[in-house]
Amino acid sequence: MQQTPREDAAARRRVLLRAVRQMEWRRDGAVPWNHATAAVFASPDDLVLALHARWHRILAVRLDPLLERGCTVDEVVAEWWSWAADTPGQRAVLDAALTQPTSELRRATDRQDALLAAAAGLVPAGTDVVLAADAWRFALWSRADQLRRPARFRTRCPGVQRWRCWRQDFGQAA
Image (cartoon, rainbow, N blue to C red):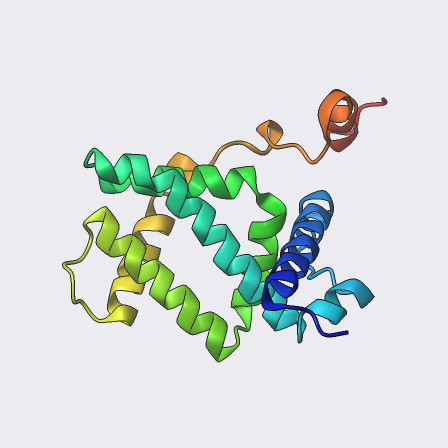
């Protein structure tokens, strides 16, 4: 039985959210690939592209109020780092994929980074995509040390287990 496009999109979303939970739990930068993901996504690169799109959609929602009130570059960069700190597992997978990106992932990343550069006011509208993307990356990494949140504020453990996991992460007996 053939799925409708709506059912296909719902299945992709469910599998992607399950993969996101695995990424956040493991935080090892590996793409969680199994039979369920293989049934929905054509390849691990397809899953990474879907993750990239999801990550940037949520970032756009977080940036929207800042951009509406006319924010500075530092505020946009700080929000990017804040979202990266909130999703270390996803960020690890995206960063690992960008070490040897496919052409599709490189184009998608360049487009998103160019849009962020234009939104932050780093480059004027109409600037070459690669140049604008490089300007964003420079702004992002030049402020990295000032804006990163310490690792102790991040957790991979839900609810009540946070304290126990925090103690395990720092080598203390639970």
